[in-house]
Image 1 (tube, rainbow, N blue to C red):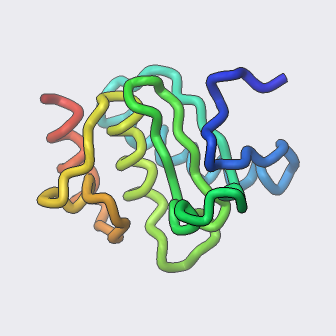
Image 2: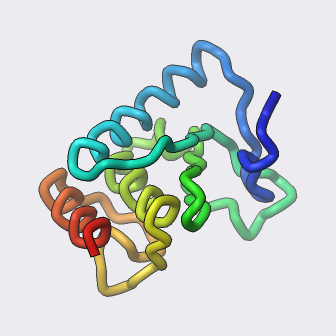
Length: 131
């Protein structure tokens, strides 16, 4: 049974299946990578689609609930070639774990997704996580 806290109004959680599990593992690998940089709490992660009833959110690829250790990543974000999953997961972790707001002057925390190198992600993640 799903926990009440694992729902987000405009994300539609996918039911676990072998295919969804594989997608979830891809995202989880980056959570483990971030956990090697700083000691993270247990993170709840959900793989989703954007609910059709929220057309204004159709371009959302991920969400992190501020300071509540839960993130939602869309299937589209994992399967799109132009989406850098590490950058996305690190961005959402900063919201979910540290309550970091969007900052258009920071390549990792700006509101729109832009792929970064692993070194850039690590440096910017550590900058925000260790404040």
